[in-house]
Length: 112
Image (cartoon, rainbow, N blue to C red; front, side, top):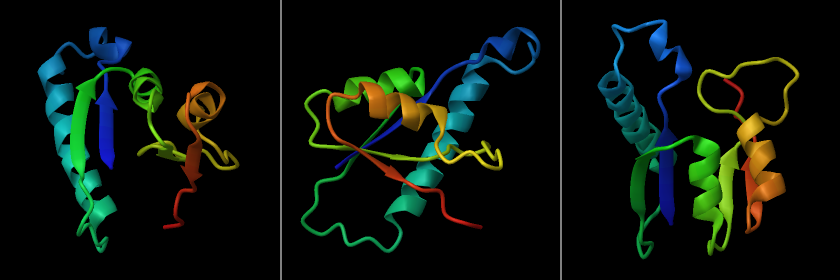
């Protein structure tokens, strides 16, 4: 199992010049480590080879590239911070369903 995280510097960096690329990278790394820990909490990984990777790339592109040669791609319906009532599928999950080169498994967001 390969756990992939992706982040990119938004174009709004020009609006908030006090927040630099290194800040986005640091925040992405902290969020990624927390997300991996949360996802693997309570999961028996004995006998399972788990690798993690965080890349600086738009999530759609990173996950699409990861789908090449993969047995399956597992994504959530929404990322952190996207809380739009009535939306059942996030834009990244929707994109991957239509463009990935392997089966895509979409896991719904858990109710809080």
